[in-house]
Image (cartoon, rainbow, N blue to C red; front, side, top):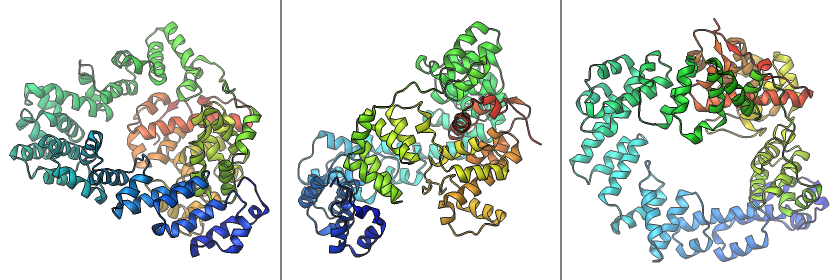
Length: 608
C-alpha cells in the first residue's frame, strides 16, 4: 500500500468518477490502482454504493484492513445512520464511536434503552438532549418517547426546556411545552413575550412578578427608546426590587450602542456582568475618557486584566493620564507580541518589530519520516489531483493521529507542496505560531499582484484579507453563502461582474481563483474609495458598508479606539486580524519592516 506506482501519474479523478457512476471497480481499474495508496479511495466509493448490504462486522474488517484512509473511516458514520434509522440496535452499538452528532447520539441512547443496557449517565444525556432550546432531529423522537415513559420528563425538566426555548426565541415551542403544566408556566411565557414586544409596559406592570425577564426588557427598550427607559428609571416607575436589574440591562445595551447618555449609568457600582464589564471599557475608550478606562479595567476579573488587549488599554490610559513610567512598562510587555496590540504598542514606543521565529521546526529526519506515512501520501496525492475536499478530509484525519512534533513536520510538508491552507492551519495548531513562512504563505501571487496593480491598492492588504476570508481555499462556501478565496456573496459577485464586464457563469465564477480575486479586490477598492481608510474599508468588506456608515465617528478619532469600539465582535477581530496580517505580508513580500501606523493611518476621520 505504501508504493506509489506509475498509475498515480494518470488521472485518479477519472478512475474515481468511473466508480462513483457505476459503483464498481472494474478489473482494469483494479490492475491499474491496486498498488497505489489511493486504491482505498476507490474501495470506499464502491463500498458506499452497496453500504446497505454490508454487515457491521464486515465493515469493521474493511476499516481495519485500510486504516490510513479517511474515506474508509467515514463509512462508519454513514453506516451508523443507516443502522439507526433501521433500528438495528446491536449492530449500531457494535460500530458506534463517540461523536458530536445529535442524531447518532439519539440512536445510541435508543439502542441502549431497547437492549436494556442503559445507565444513569445515559438518562442524564437523554434529558440533556431533550431540554435543548430548539427542536431536535426527528431521529430523536423515539428516544424522547422512551424517556417520557420512564418518567424522566419531570415538571422541573420541562420548565428548564421552556426557559431554554425562550432563550432561543422559540416562543411556539415554549407554548407547546407548557400545555401539560399549570397556568403559572403560561404566565411565565406570556410575560417573556410582553418583555420583548412591549418592554416599557412590562417594566412598569409585571417586572416585580417576573424579575427573570427584567434585564431583557430593559435591554430592548434601551435599543428602541433609551430616553424612555432612563425616564422610567429616574422617576422610579420600575419597582425598586428589580431597579438594579433594569439599570444593568440599560447600561449594557447603551454602552454597546455608544449612547453618550450611558456614561452616568456606567459609572455606577453595578453587579458584575461579562458583557457589561467589557463594554464599559470599550465605551470609555471610544469617548477617550481615560480615567474612566482605568476604573473600568480595574473591575475586570484578574485573569482578564492580564490579557494582552486589556494590558494595552491600561497602558494607553496610563499614558494619557500622565503615568508615563507605568505606561512604558506595560507597552513594553505588550510589544513582545506580534499581534494587533503588539504592533500598536511597539509603534507607541518606537520599537522595532521582531518577526524572527522563536519556535523551532522539527528535524529533517522527522519530516522525512512523516512524509513516508501512507496516510500522509494519500492526502498529498489527493491534493495534487485537485480533489481538495477529499484531500482536506484526509488531512484532518491524518493530523488527528499525529503528535505535536509530527504535526509541525506535516505543516512543513504542506508548505513544500504549496498546500497553503493546510500549512497555515497546521502550523498554528501545532504551536509554530510565529513561523510566518508557514502561517502566511505567498499564495496566488500572480492574480493578487495583478489585482493590486489594477485597483491601486496594497498587495499585502489583499493577501491579509484573503487569508482571513478563506485561508487560501478557493472552493469553500460559508454558512451565509459566500464563495471562494475572498468569500464573495453571489449577489455581490453578479453585480460586480456586470460592472467589470465579466461573463457571469453562476457560482462557478466565484470558485475560479483569478475571477474571485478580481471581483473581490474591485469590491474592496470601492470600499476604500468610499470610506478613505483601510480599517473602515476592511470593516465594510466584512459587515457591509451600511453598518460601517453607522459606525463612522462624528469627529476624528484614534484608529485603535475606533476599532476597539466596533459593536460586532466578529468584525472587530476581523479588522485587527487583516491589518496585522498586512504588516506581516509587507515583510514577507519585501523583506522590509513596515509599521502598522504606515499601512493604516493612526487617525480616522469622518468621510463626507
